[in-house]
Length: 355
Ligand code: ZN
Ligand code: ZN
Image 1 (tube, rainbow, N blue to C red):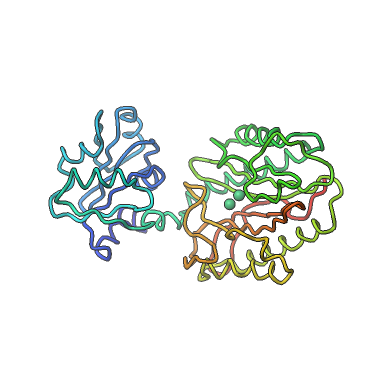
Image 2 (image 1 turned 30 degrees about the horizontal axis):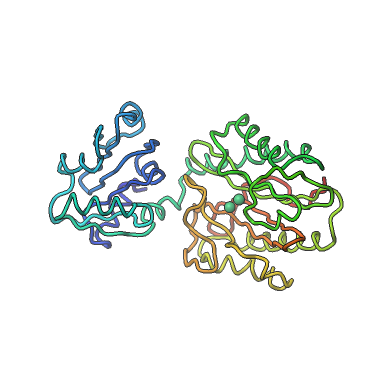
């Protein structure tokens, strides 16, 4: 198995570059192990250098091995120049999705004889294939989320504000070992459940409503992401019907998720089930996304995604149907892509829970 640095350098010839510059913290962490919020890496075939500021002088030396470490109180780019890490005539790749335009201009001005070439998702494509150590961390994050879901179910009652449930999710995930919430929890009840990204509000949960809970935990940098929709008391027959449609779409996609399928093909499996039931226009987001050091990363599973799934990808499968004024249903699990099938990490039940 090539190291992450070796895998990155293996792309230098096809990209016709001599070096790669990294600034985005999750990418820095993936490449070097450094978890600080400010740093620049210059990676060449001859070695890798990481420049950060004085706040991280102790931390960076604990976290990063085998790299040249440089600390500066001033501009990180200025330190690159002072150390002559980039030489005239070099072609330097960088991630065009995360380097700011102002940083690009500063680099061009500071290194007029160096060519800077934007590339898309170079580090993220490496990070899309998880090793055993990363998978163990994601499993732990998912366990924390599953345990928390079981604990909050008894707290869901008419009259309880959505924000109370969101607060309980955060508190309990931390108690079970999460270092943070993976994102601001979605707790959306009643008509608000028709908002795919309805953040928790002061609205009180009421009888007869659907309630969508979408949350996750971070464990050692790695994210989990799960959605369940539950019924509070008796819900309308159509709400039950859309629950059944979303569940069968989600299960069909899990059945189809394996190495060799493209993102858009997998998306089409779930979308096809929903289309057959007449709800396609109410499924208005992509089927899923990679999870790892970021909550949304490669590979994408959407109508447009040509990404080919391979063993070691960890992705979400999350179809949803959202009907204005009625409510919405989404069911989301995290899965590991294998050669001939996928492994579903979440253990939370998927039958409609009536609370
Ligand atoms: Zn989610
Ligand atoms: Zn998600």
